[in-house]
Image (cartoon, rainbow, N blue to C red; front, side, top):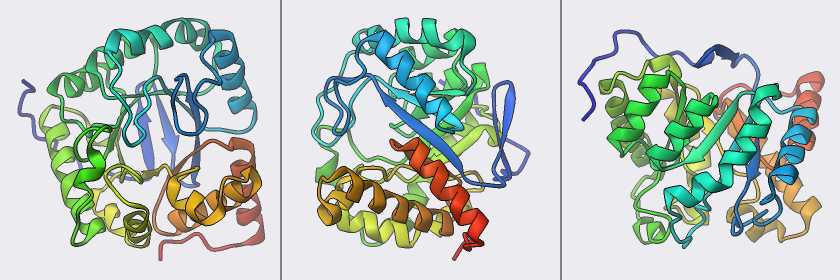
Length: 292
Protein backbone atom coordinates (compact mmCIF):
# COMPACT_ATOMS: atom_id res chain seq x y z
CA UNK A 1 0.00 0.00 0.00
CA UNK A 2 1.12 3.55 -0.66
CA UNK A 3 1.93 5.78 2.30
CA UNK A 4 -0.65 8.49 2.92
CA UNK A 5 1.41 11.59 2.26
CA UNK A 6 -0.34 14.86 1.60
CA UNK A 7 1.43 17.14 -0.86
CA UNK A 8 1.88 20.67 0.43
CA UNK A 9 2.71 22.38 -2.86
CA UNK A 10 0.14 23.50 -5.36
CA UNK A 11 0.19 22.08 -8.87
CA UNK A 12 1.40 24.33 -11.66
CA UNK A 13 1.06 23.87 -15.41
CA UNK A 14 3.91 26.24 -16.37
CA UNK A 15 6.39 23.39 -16.47
CA UNK A 16 6.46 19.64 -16.03
CA UNK A 17 9.24 18.04 -14.02
CA UNK A 18 10.31 14.60 -15.23
CA UNK A 19 13.17 13.01 -13.31
CA UNK A 20 16.29 15.03 -14.11
CA UNK A 21 14.77 17.77 -16.25
CA UNK A 22 11.92 20.23 -16.49
CA UNK A 23 9.87 20.74 -19.66
CA UNK A 24 8.59 24.25 -20.29
CA UNK A 25 4.90 24.48 -21.15
CA UNK A 26 4.97 28.07 -22.37
CA UNK A 27 4.33 26.65 -25.86
CA UNK A 28 2.56 23.39 -26.78
CA UNK A 29 4.72 20.26 -26.73
CA UNK A 30 4.63 17.43 -29.26
CA UNK A 31 4.77 13.83 -28.04
CA UNK A 32 5.63 11.40 -30.83
CA UNK A 33 4.04 7.94 -30.84
CA UNK A 34 6.05 4.76 -31.37
CA UNK A 35 4.08 1.51 -31.08
CA UNK A 36 6.05 -1.72 -30.96
CA UNK A 37 2.94 -3.88 -31.16
CA UNK A 38 1.49 -6.26 -33.75
CA UNK A 39 -2.09 -5.01 -33.32
CA UNK A 40 -2.29 -1.26 -32.63
CA UNK A 41 -5.17 0.29 -34.57
CA UNK A 42 -3.01 2.53 -36.75
CA UNK A 43 0.59 1.33 -36.98
CA UNK A 44 0.59 -2.18 -35.52
CA UNK A 45 3.35 -4.41 -36.84
CA UNK A 46 5.48 -1.67 -38.41
CA UNK A 47 8.18 -1.44 -35.73
CA UNK A 48 8.36 -4.83 -34.07
CA UNK A 49 12.04 -5.28 -34.92
CA UNK A 50 14.31 -3.28 -32.57
CA UNK A 51 16.40 -1.82 -35.40
CA UNK A 52 13.28 -0.51 -37.15
CA UNK A 53 11.94 0.89 -33.88
CA UNK A 54 15.24 2.65 -33.10
CA UNK A 55 15.30 4.15 -36.59
CA UNK A 56 11.73 5.42 -36.20
CA UNK A 57 12.53 6.84 -32.76
CA UNK A 58 15.44 8.80 -34.20
CA UNK A 59 13.25 10.00 -37.05
CA UNK A 60 10.67 11.23 -34.52
CA UNK A 61 13.38 13.23 -32.76
CA UNK A 62 14.62 14.67 -36.07
CA UNK A 63 11.06 15.72 -36.99
CA UNK A 64 10.88 17.97 -33.93
CA UNK A 65 9.19 16.00 -31.15
CA UNK A 66 9.68 17.06 -27.55
CA UNK A 67 8.91 13.63 -26.06
CA UNK A 68 8.91 10.05 -27.37
CA UNK A 69 6.08 7.80 -26.14
CA UNK A 70 6.65 4.07 -26.62
CA UNK A 71 3.85 1.55 -26.28
CA UNK A 72 4.18 -2.25 -26.35
CA UNK A 73 0.57 -3.24 -25.64
CA UNK A 74 -2.38 -2.21 -27.79
CA UNK A 75 -5.14 -0.57 -25.75
CA UNK A 76 -7.55 -0.01 -28.63
CA UNK A 77 -11.19 -0.90 -27.86
CA UNK A 78 -11.60 -4.66 -27.68
CA UNK A 79 -7.87 -5.40 -27.51
CA UNK A 80 -6.82 -8.50 -25.63
CA UNK A 81 -4.46 -8.04 -22.68
CA UNK A 82 -0.76 -8.74 -23.04
CA UNK A 83 1.19 -10.38 -20.22
CA UNK A 84 3.81 -8.09 -18.63
CA UNK A 85 6.66 -10.43 -19.60
CA UNK A 86 5.61 -10.34 -23.24
CA UNK A 87 5.23 -6.55 -23.12
CA UNK A 88 8.70 -6.18 -21.63
CA UNK A 89 10.10 -8.54 -24.23
CA UNK A 90 9.01 -6.08 -26.92
CA UNK A 91 10.71 -3.20 -25.09
CA UNK A 92 13.93 -4.50 -23.62
CA UNK A 93 16.18 -4.55 -26.67
CA UNK A 94 14.74 -1.31 -28.01
CA UNK A 95 15.40 0.59 -24.77
CA UNK A 96 18.86 -0.92 -24.39
CA UNK A 97 19.89 0.32 -27.83
CA UNK A 98 18.01 3.63 -27.77
CA UNK A 99 18.39 5.22 -24.36
CA UNK A 100 22.15 5.74 -24.02
CA UNK A 101 22.30 8.30 -26.83
CA UNK A 102 18.69 9.42 -27.35
CA UNK A 103 18.19 13.21 -27.06
CA UNK A 104 14.52 13.26 -25.98
CA UNK A 105 12.85 12.23 -22.74
CA UNK A 106 11.21 8.84 -23.24
CA UNK A 107 7.76 7.88 -21.97
CA UNK A 108 6.51 4.32 -21.52
CA UNK A 109 2.81 3.79 -22.29
CA UNK A 110 1.83 0.91 -20.01
CA UNK A 111 -0.64 -0.26 -17.39
CA UNK A 112 1.69 -2.81 -15.81
CA UNK A 113 3.74 -1.76 -12.79
CA UNK A 114 6.45 -4.37 -13.41
CA UNK A 115 6.98 -3.07 -16.96
CA UNK A 116 7.06 0.54 -15.75
CA UNK A 117 9.60 -0.28 -13.06
CA UNK A 118 11.92 -2.07 -15.49
CA UNK A 119 11.67 0.78 -17.99
CA UNK A 120 12.39 3.36 -15.28
CA UNK A 121 15.41 1.37 -14.16
CA UNK A 122 16.61 1.43 -17.77
CA UNK A 123 16.37 5.23 -17.81
CA UNK A 124 13.00 6.34 -19.14
CA UNK A 125 11.67 9.63 -17.78
CA UNK A 126 7.88 9.29 -17.91
CA UNK A 127 5.25 6.65 -17.19
CA UNK A 128 2.11 7.12 -19.28
CA UNK A 129 -0.36 5.13 -17.18
CA UNK A 130 -3.43 4.33 -19.25
CA UNK A 131 -5.09 2.74 -16.23
CA UNK A 132 -5.21 6.03 -14.34
CA UNK A 133 -3.22 5.07 -11.26
CA UNK A 134 -5.44 2.23 -10.10
CA UNK A 135 -2.48 0.01 -9.17
CA UNK A 136 -0.67 1.03 -5.95
CA UNK A 137 2.46 -0.71 -7.26
CA UNK A 138 2.50 1.61 -10.26
CA UNK A 139 2.15 4.64 -8.00
CA UNK A 140 4.97 3.41 -5.79
CA UNK A 141 7.26 2.98 -8.80
CA UNK A 142 6.50 6.51 -10.01
CA UNK A 143 7.15 7.93 -6.56
CA UNK A 144 10.42 6.04 -6.08
CA UNK A 145 11.88 7.08 -9.44
CA UNK A 146 10.44 10.63 -9.29
CA UNK A 147 9.46 10.35 -12.92
CA UNK A 148 6.91 12.29 -14.88
CA UNK A 149 3.58 10.56 -14.45
CA UNK A 150 0.62 10.76 -16.83
CA UNK A 151 -2.75 9.82 -15.35
CA UNK A 152 -5.19 8.92 -18.13
CA UNK A 153 -8.92 8.57 -17.73
CA UNK A 154 -10.35 5.17 -18.61
CA UNK A 155 -13.19 3.07 -17.26
CA UNK A 156 -12.81 -0.69 -17.19
CA UNK A 157 -10.25 -2.42 -19.41
CA UNK A 158 -9.63 -2.14 -23.18
CA UNK A 159 -11.56 -5.34 -23.85
CA UNK A 160 -14.73 -4.05 -22.11
CA UNK A 161 -14.37 -0.31 -21.67
CA UNK A 162 -16.90 0.70 -24.33
CA UNK A 163 -19.67 -0.92 -22.27
CA UNK A 164 -18.99 1.78 -19.66
CA UNK A 165 -19.26 4.72 -22.05
CA UNK A 166 -22.25 6.20 -20.23
CA UNK A 167 -22.18 9.83 -19.10
CA UNK A 168 -24.57 12.61 -18.19
CA UNK A 169 -21.84 15.25 -18.63
CA UNK A 170 -18.69 13.66 -20.01
CA UNK A 171 -16.27 16.55 -19.31
CA UNK A 172 -17.48 17.02 -15.74
CA UNK A 173 -17.37 13.30 -14.99
CA UNK A 174 -13.90 12.89 -16.50
CA UNK A 175 -12.73 15.82 -14.37
CA UNK A 176 -14.13 14.30 -11.19
CA UNK A 177 -12.68 10.85 -11.90
CA UNK A 178 -9.27 12.32 -12.70
CA UNK A 179 -9.44 14.25 -9.43
CA UNK A 180 -9.80 10.93 -7.63
CA UNK A 181 -6.78 9.57 -9.53
CA UNK A 182 -4.78 12.71 -8.75
CA UNK A 183 -5.54 12.57 -5.05
CA UNK A 184 -4.58 8.91 -4.92
CA UNK A 185 -1.24 9.72 -6.56
CA UNK A 186 -0.58 12.60 -4.16
CA UNK A 187 -1.39 10.42 -1.17
CA UNK A 188 1.24 7.99 -2.42
CA UNK A 189 3.86 10.73 -2.27
CA UNK A 190 4.12 11.62 -5.96
CA UNK A 191 5.11 15.27 -6.19
CA UNK A 192 2.42 17.43 -7.80
CA UNK A 193 4.83 18.93 -10.33
CA UNK A 194 5.39 15.42 -11.72
CA UNK A 195 1.73 14.89 -12.65
CA UNK A 196 0.13 15.29 -16.08
CA UNK A 197 -3.48 14.48 -17.01
CA UNK A 198 -4.94 12.83 -20.11
CA UNK A 199 -8.75 12.81 -20.57
CA UNK A 200 -8.50 9.57 -22.56
CA UNK A 201 -10.16 10.34 -25.88
CA UNK A 202 -11.57 7.08 -27.24
CA UNK A 203 -11.19 5.20 -23.96
CA UNK A 204 -14.65 4.33 -22.65
CA UNK A 205 -16.02 7.14 -24.83
CA UNK A 206 -18.00 7.06 -28.06
CA UNK A 207 -17.06 9.36 -30.96
CA UNK A 208 -19.87 11.76 -30.02
CA UNK A 209 -18.73 11.79 -26.39
CA UNK A 210 -15.21 12.56 -27.61
CA UNK A 211 -16.50 15.67 -29.38
CA UNK A 212 -18.39 16.72 -26.27
CA UNK A 213 -15.27 16.19 -24.18
CA UNK A 214 -13.21 18.30 -26.58
CA UNK A 215 -15.67 21.19 -26.26
CA UNK A 216 -15.51 21.01 -22.47
CA UNK A 217 -11.80 20.29 -22.19
CA UNK A 218 -11.00 23.54 -20.40
CA UNK A 219 -12.58 22.26 -17.18
CA UNK A 220 -9.59 19.94 -16.74
CA UNK A 221 -7.46 22.96 -15.90
CA UNK A 222 -9.07 22.60 -12.50
CA UNK A 223 -6.70 19.68 -11.93
CA UNK A 224 -3.81 22.12 -11.73
CA UNK A 225 -1.36 20.27 -13.96
CA UNK A 226 -0.51 19.98 -17.66
CA UNK A 227 -3.06 18.40 -19.99
CA UNK A 228 -2.05 15.82 -22.60
CA UNK A 229 -4.42 14.86 -25.40
CA UNK A 230 -4.22 11.95 -27.83
CA UNK A 231 -6.54 12.58 -30.76
CA UNK A 232 -4.31 11.42 -33.60
CA UNK A 233 -6.05 9.02 -36.02
CA UNK A 234 -8.88 8.31 -33.60
CA UNK A 235 -12.19 6.92 -34.82
CA UNK A 236 -13.93 10.26 -34.23
CA UNK A 237 -11.71 11.68 -36.98
CA UNK A 238 -11.96 8.69 -39.30
CA UNK A 239 -15.74 8.94 -39.16
CA UNK A 240 -15.40 12.42 -40.69
CA UNK A 241 -12.29 12.22 -42.83
CA UNK A 242 -12.17 8.56 -43.79
CA UNK A 243 -8.92 6.63 -43.99
CA UNK A 244 -7.14 8.75 -46.59
CA UNK A 245 -3.86 9.65 -44.83
CA UNK A 246 -3.73 13.29 -45.91
CA UNK A 247 -7.35 13.92 -44.96
CA UNK A 248 -6.88 12.20 -41.62
CA UNK A 249 -3.77 14.25 -40.92
CA UNK A 250 -5.63 17.47 -41.70
CA UNK A 251 -8.42 16.47 -39.35
CA UNK A 252 -5.89 15.71 -36.63
CA UNK A 253 -4.27 19.13 -37.00
CA UNK A 254 -7.64 20.85 -36.72
CA UNK A 255 -8.65 19.08 -33.51
CA UNK A 256 -5.14 19.58 -32.13
CA UNK A 257 -5.47 23.33 -32.55
CA UNK A 258 -8.88 23.26 -30.90
CA UNK A 259 -7.52 21.19 -28.01
CA UNK A 260 -4.78 23.75 -27.42
CA UNK A 261 -7.37 26.53 -27.47
CA UNK A 262 -9.20 24.54 -24.80
CA UNK A 263 -6.14 24.24 -22.59
CA UNK A 264 -4.11 21.26 -23.85
CA UNK A 265 -0.36 21.54 -23.24
CA UNK A 266 0.86 18.40 -25.02
CA UNK A 267 -0.31 16.81 -28.27
CA UNK A 268 0.35 13.07 -28.61
CA UNK A 269 0.58 12.42 -32.35
CA UNK A 270 1.74 10.08 -35.11
CA UNK A 271 2.60 12.83 -37.65
CA UNK A 272 5.31 14.62 -35.69
CA UNK A 273 6.92 16.70 -38.45
CA UNK A 274 3.59 17.90 -39.83
CA UNK A 275 2.33 18.79 -36.37
CA UNK A 276 5.52 20.71 -35.53
CA UNK A 277 5.33 22.69 -38.77
CA UNK A 278 1.64 23.38 -38.16
CA UNK A 279 2.25 24.72 -34.65
CA UNK A 280 5.14 26.88 -35.82
CA UNK A 281 2.96 28.31 -38.59
CA UNK A 282 0.14 29.10 -36.17
CA UNK A 283 2.54 30.89 -33.86
CA UNK A 284 4.18 32.85 -36.68
CA UNK A 285 0.83 33.89 -38.13
CA UNK A 286 -0.44 35.21 -34.82
CA UNK A 287 -3.29 32.69 -34.61
CA UNK A 288 -4.74 32.79 -31.12
CA UNK A 289 -4.25 29.64 -29.08
CA UNK A 290 -5.50 31.13 -25.84
CA UNK A 291 -7.96 29.13 -23.77
CA UNK A 292 -11.56 29.67 -24.87
